Image (cartoon, rainbow, N blue to C red):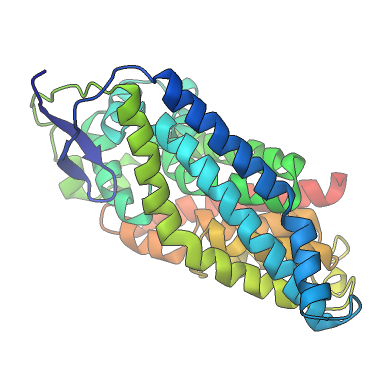
Length: 365
């Protein structure tokens, strides 16, 4: 079989990089499938024993009293750290395989020529499965403009991609349960869709930097990459190595902060500061969250600890969304392609959507 170099788009560099893939079987073999199922079974058994192990380690082996602050903090850390890392590894592997179907180049082609409304919905959904990081915001934005993707549709993608991603959803599911994870996903997508639609209605294309608007789509032929299942499994493994390798330190740091809050902050202490009765807590949480530099891996464990100490769900979700979707570093990067007025509108529209979400959940939950 003749071996060929395969071409794929690198989101974090904004260019095209050659990836050589070895020849292999087009389908997963029975032994490979069996090995995968055995691995999944071992994963489940280990995962189910994490809570008993954390209690045994903290209160039996180390000898801490269950009523002690330090003991509660250590048990929280010993339980949540492997729990989150195991969930993260599994889901990132699966999503890495799914992402092999949605390269940034293919996403750009799908969205090119799409009308708004339907385009906003599609771009927000694609944003959840397309590789994205802050450094890729500029090349992706330029590529979308070159492809003729409407401005509002582009912003729906740029909002959904960092905010509604597998790391945030896995951590929320693992630490707070599937209901809050589903709630976060639904509201995050709604904010991305509506904010993009509003920005599109404002006709702000003239606030894109002139050099970006003057670009024209370069005509070039790209060989469509043909991937087999062994390629997609390999890409899932590479996603684990890349993503988990980059965020594990944030996971450990976030769980460490959460452990301190869990063990030492009195019950219901946060109710007076971030509770439902403090109406100003939602806008304050958004304003505090915007200049912070963190990601979902670092902020979700803190969110869990805040909720356990009496903080309102709407306030905490508003804080988390503002940290992830409106981070100051991303605004600085987007300044390369957007004029200050458009960045201001972007922050105002998304911030208003996040605050509305916070107030709504504080009212109904």
